[in-house]
Image (cartoon, rainbow, N blue to C red; front, side, top):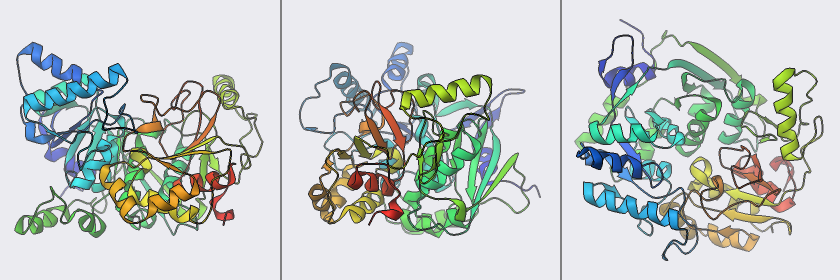
Length: 466
């Protein structure tokens, strides 16, 4: 019998037909949409005189450019307001479930999907957003698509895709104190570069991965795209089933037992081959932070910024240009650098475990005077839990400003921008030039490292801050 990877099993089960010497016609189980990439897709459907084939397979929420204050009021920005209104109109017209601003399950699309139990093992999931790979944490094939593909899925529930190559990244061993899943993925990207997984779908494996919570696994899979991968996934296990059981859209009763029996088969067969493999020791991973303008430019917080001497030609030029933008110099320590903003949130680290970690760290402490500290829950459910557990009180006493759910300062598409020239240590996923605002300087790190920065006012190692 042919030995198959987890990726092969899910992919092959969803191929409607294969085009000779071309892509596969690939069936999509669940389609998430938001206000930014869907309006044009719906407009094109209207022009063609066709509707949505399976409205019940699509779920919508506004998240990218919504304000995170006064969400009960009219959105001030005209374009943002029009996009949200269009999403409402299109969902109503086509019978699509919408979790709108102010509703009990509003939030970032990649946070509410798992919360609701929409995301399940063995599924194929797409969204007009690159960080759709988040859902791969459940043992699903999930990836971002463009506007024309959003239209294709709405119209046919299928997409044309060339099957990617397969990569496995194994991380074995126990994580040290102060080391989180965000540090794991920043470490991996620093090793293989921001383009090192281009053309691949990545399976994460090893004891350091399987010992993670579901929320921590989502952080890992979320940033697969930041090393060029089409997506990332982790085989489902008891941790997955425990997370899903009882959720709104999870199977119930006998259907649950049948689902789990199927999910148990969703693992890579012994002897199945990958096109490329990497192995890492968890003991070598420490709190990480980025210093440049792509997620691959990362180092351990205790280390110095690399020297450019070993680089040549365009690589050296782009490296030095990146440091110039950041206001850093080769071979200098990054620890101790003064910071202006910290941001906890996004589809990478805006879940309740992230907020618990930050609150636990800053309890009884105060943020530094030079720090503006924003904490943005990934959903209304996260916000609700943060209040119920007393986390909001702890954070506000420490000087953090809790905002309402949304993508917020992850990207410069809403009001939560970092001013030009200012430094922000962020739990989000991208540190490109201008990502958090024109001229903003972004350093990516874990929630614990962000908490350490908040209370010290400088880049700090969370293991050294008490």
